[in-house]
Amino acid sequence: MGGVCSRKRSQLVEEDDDSLQTPTRFSKTSSLKWLLLTLPHSSSDVSRKGPGKGPGRCPTLMELCVAKVCKDISKYSTFSMLPTDLSQQIFDELVDSNCLTDESLETFRDCALHDIYLGEYPGVKDAWMEVVASQRQSLLSVDISCSDVTDRGLNFLSDCSNMQSLSCNYCEHVSEHGLGVLSGFSNLTSLSFKRSDGVTAEGMSVFANLVNLVNLDLERCLKIHGGLVHMKGLRKLESLNMRYCNYITDSDIKYLSDLTNLKELQLSSCRITDLGISYLTGLSKLTHLNLESCPVTAACLEAISGPAAFHNFPNNGLYLDPLGLHASIA
Image (cartoon, rainbow, N blue to C red):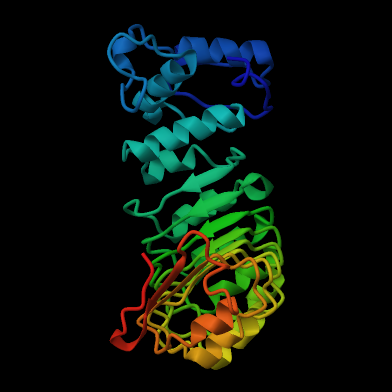
């Protein structure tokens, strides 16, 4: 319970149940009393999902609190006075149980949540992003994949400059204009925009500011030819996925030659030839290279590994399927 009561807030909570009225200011003691009042009378109210939660196991006080609050979510207007770790668990449980709605989402405004994972969650739209963005500097990770969020919704995140991870896979309504918000995310270490027409060569200019980026996923982004020039300064990048980016050519790959920390590179179904692979000769840390269905020949292996073929790929991390030659290592 120490983790739950490790912090305190000063905001007022409004509740419909008069028996749960609380003072305007919360100390550790009053927060604990509030939590105890919300406990269910029987452990049968607690969900028994997940490993270690089988029959006969006594639920923790945290689990009891979260289960009861989620059950009575309609009674509360805000959780902003709660410690972040508790409000985070309540939020996660509502998402996992598919119970987060427009109304219940509003209770998490200004709660200083760290992680908002809404990938593939139904109903996520621009209006939700206003509450997401209200976490401001506390927000570290966001996943809104497969949502109806547009440029307007993405721009709400402009005040969340401490963001470290952002996933916008299959967000069909985000254009290159929406990518502008990324320019303020210099702390970002992971970025994923799978199958997005919004990621264009011109829009990728904001990538130059993402100097701490470690993982970048642009799978099936078909409009990035000519945009890799904006990535040449991303010296911390370790993983780059450009599978099925069909229009990537040798002229794009040369901008990767200075990414000396690159360990994994996915180039399946790109228009890369032996010339393009020759630009990778200085990437000594590269241990996983996928060239399936790229028009390369076995000659590129010497360019990559030197006389001792595959010495850079100790874990059989080189994958080739050049023009039907099937010279692949599984």
